[in-house]
Length: 224
Ligand code: SF4
Image 1: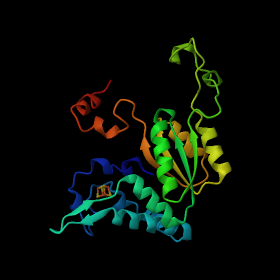
Image 2: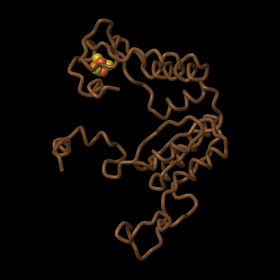
Image 3: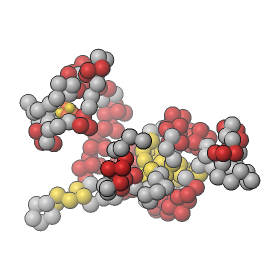
Image 4: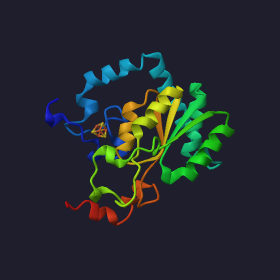
């Protein structure tokens, strides 16, 4: 693709409801993918002809719709937390066996999530990040990158997490608190569809967007 056409939707200057992607004949910048990438748009639309892809897309749209309720004054407000959405989606898709891939730091949350999934009738397979108990030495890490070089340190093993889920033939994988790039690796190796319940943010209580919603974001915008 011509670099001048690389999409920059994140910095689109137009108001939400004026944009071409939500309004026919709407406004758009010169590199708008809705306006300029119609061939790719048609190719993408053709993918929804696949029965499974269509079903996933339809059910996720229905789950999203059901996430709102209407108050007596007509106001629409969200009424479902993400964990409920995941279960509603799984039920709509006919998924029976859920794979829960979690970080050891969120082991208490993982236990609660597994109990909730089970209470809703799902079979739960869960695998912790440290599974396999492989030393970080296997990654060629030097002492300077170990938290306590005097002690053996177990590496996170997203590839084994994924392989165990594939072996268990889970219907849907749910990621809980995996680190940056451990999630990338796990998704690279997982066979079944995958969604995320929560991501890891050690500093911000696993709420990475908190960094944007405070004056800390000004610091982040300064080049290091
Ligand atoms: S109008 Fe075009 S450029 Fe703007 S957000 Fe929508 S798709 Fe992206």
